[in-house]
Image (cartoon, rainbow, N blue to C red; front, side, top):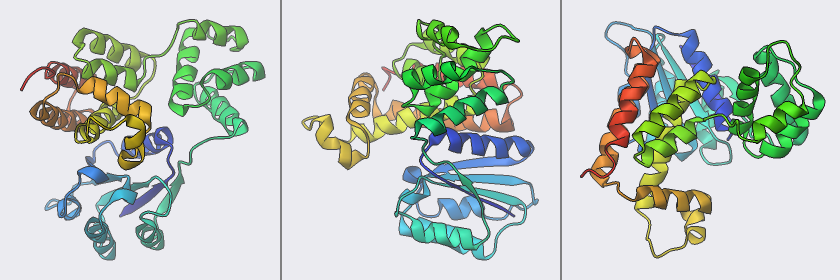
Length: 314
């Protein structure tokens, strides 16, 4: 059995850790569960032994939000784990779910840190490591320029590194002038740009954004994750009173006000049934890009067309 606990609120680092494990087990069947979508019994069903002993990976995200009953299902599994299954748990931090985290650690889990990077010195180290991973060199001044312009969002920083490595001539040390040129308009299409186009019903733009994102190094898994996160946010906001201001709803929904305002704009034209169908489509796309389809990019294109054209339907 493999047992991995990812701890920390930084989604990019958590997603990368999960993607790395999935890549190391390409033949394994993967199931991904997210706490606020899990009902009692789903975890037990997912963790039940396979009749054929096939290699499997079960990913459970945001376990700090699991109900007590669902947490107990994981604890019961740890008593008698399946040797053919890798279980990956992501806890975003804080005191919620600490009892479960303690039991997971006691069971011998490999712990991977995904803490939010806040200090400029740590962001600088992240940027340098990104360029090292991409096989490129960057000047100290350029590192600081990137942090000054994009330092509040690690996903944007990572995207900028990929874009610059792709755009700037091979062999050249990336300098401050290259960062300035990037800031003037050569902005990488991220998974969230794709998600925005999809949920706005702009199919053509969504497909163009998808291709740009993939061509500049964005993992299809992260694109699916971005679309899923946006749909979950819309679902949360759809149930809230329209008479309340976003600032008043922020603590109740666990979302920043700007995200609530954005979701409210995106909800225009979306019916409850259309959102539900989109969730099913996205779940299939997630399975496809993790091995069920011969061409993950094509599978994701089909899903994007299906979801974006669902806007306006009943």
